[in-house]
Length: 115
Length: 115
Image 1 (cartoon, chains in turn brown, green):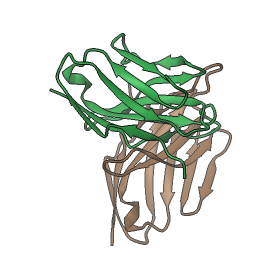
Image 2 (spheres, chains in turn brown, orange):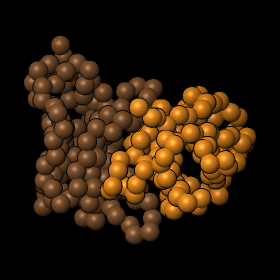
Image 3 (cartoon, one colour):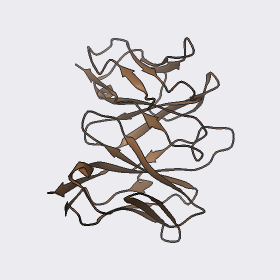
Image 4 (cartoon, each protein chain N blue to C red):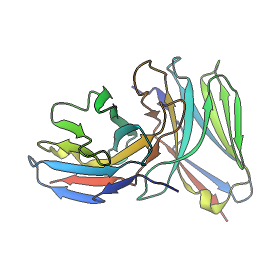
């Protein structure tokens, strides 16, 4: 049951260039989307989020775009830096009244930024 | 910056034994979670906890699993009789608000190895 899909397992980009990480989802009830970064031997670290009422959210070098009609979101990192090399997880949740909305994660994509 | 801490970082146990994984969430957070990641697979939701009770649990979280907040600071996950397939990274997370209002903050995980 892959409600959140990250179809590309890896991405390699040159330092200074743009990294575009893609994510698709199938559950139309999802209304909150997040990107997490994970280094080996560490837990996921929150990067940026977007609510379904928006189509873009920007935080420094990181921008998330949401296309609800296509059920697609993407994370843009500009400019990419070697320290950005990590596994990036897309996650989504659906508001559930009276409950903690759980996050559903994609499988992750390994980003390598070449110096 | 406040962080979620988990102990131990690595736990090795024999099949059939009980294990307790410990977590100290961020102090002013109210919502608590356990997730796990089997090697090579995606991060999976196990259980959410709010106001001293379970809010939601996944089908993975069967009768062998339990959670507790024994003293107002610790949040524990107990596996009563471990199986080989319980081997995974277990991540604790906390948030100050319902998902959609604030992101989850994860600990660095406990690697559970069942032999």
